[in-house]
Length: 154
Image 1 (cartoon, helix red, strand yellow):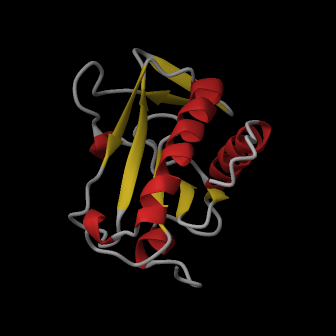
Image 2 (cartoon, helix red, strand yellow):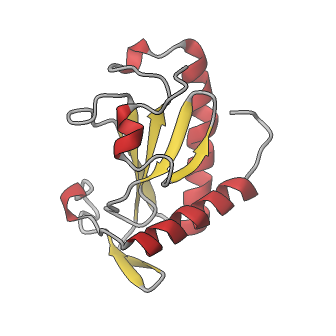
C-alpha cells in the first residue's frame, strides 16, 4: 500500500475532498459534480489496471461500496446509482460514483440537476461549486460516513 496519495487521488482533491479512507481505498468528493454527491472511490495503491490490485483490496471494496451507497441514499436520496470505471485520463484504479435522480437536488442554495436522466450520466455538464460549498459538501458526507460506522474495518 502506498504511503503517499496516488496521482489520481491528488487530481480529485486529496486530502481536501476526502470523505473516508480504508487501508485500500479513498472516498473523495468529485470537485465537479455531475449530480449532487458524486464521488470518486480510488485505490490507495498505484495500479493502472483493476486486475493488478491484491485480494485484500478486492475484499475491502465491498464494504466501502455498501457504505458509499448508504451515505448517498441518506444525503442525496438518489433513485439509481452508477459506478463507472473510466480510466482514460487518470491512470490509477478508481470508480466514479454518480447518484442519479429525476429532476434536481439542492445543497447550500446550489441546484444540482441530473441532465442525463434517465440515460447515461452527463459528466460534461457538471456543477462546479465554489470552494466553500464544496467544503460543506465534504463535511456533510464525512458526517454521514461517520454516522454509518459499521465496525467492519473496511
